[in-house]
Length: 280
Ligand code: HH2
Image 1 (cartoon, rainbow, N blue to C red):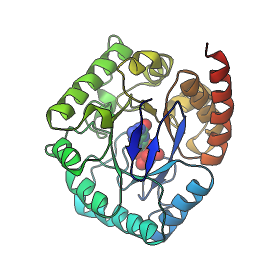
Image 2 (image 1 turned 60 degrees about the vertical axis):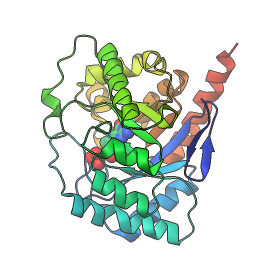
Image 3 (image 1 turned 90 degrees about the horizontal axis):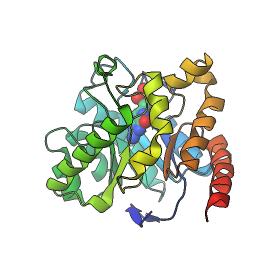
Image 4 (image 1 turned 90 degrees about the vertical axis):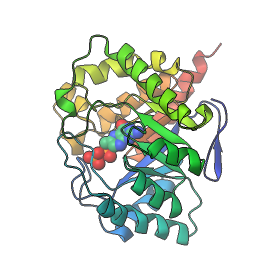
């Protein structure tokens, strides 16, 4: 991967780099309600960094299937105090805001966020322009529709090819709005407008996404395809999450979005050591 600056850090090489997840929400599918309090969320972020996260992703709106939209003002109330606390305590690590709303992204960037992680690929009016103006990198994730209706929009012929084409189109839109291609990271959106089989097909088809020429981020952690394969509930999906993580690393994915940073760190190191043996 070419060097990619996120806040104070330049990421380069194959990684993988771990993005630890903190959801300051009452209703996220696996950790809802645990980090709604800003002090609890900030402490969780610091814990994830101590466990080896390379950056932390903070979200104030659940994107689980069927989730209702949260007003921007409420989302800002959830994430800004956490970012402010982390920066006030001297946390220098890159911080990401998980939002699809430009108002939230603007407030979060002012409060110290370094990256916009958008599950709708910068589709909202003004979002790509805001990212371009702020000069920050962005994760463009693939989804169809919104969290409220996405699971009725899973009609694909060739899911890997269609996701790749739609990500390419999202990237072209962002570039037209002024976001340099060199600041874009792509994400297939595991579980977003995807059945379990489609999520598995995307995980098996990662080389076709890497062929788009941008760093790839994948978020398989605790997702429902693991439940579909194993029967495990979200709280019991760590082993399946680590298996998916290893598959991503072997496919050359640079960034992994994970809830369980300590175990993911060990799994990522081992998978990367195997990946690097394979290199000619
Ligand atoms: N998954 C979730 C949220 N944001 N962002 C990216 N780039 N990729 C993902 O796969 C992704 C994401 C869903 O997970 P989580 O944040 O744990 O749950 P919820 O959306 O219920 O808050």
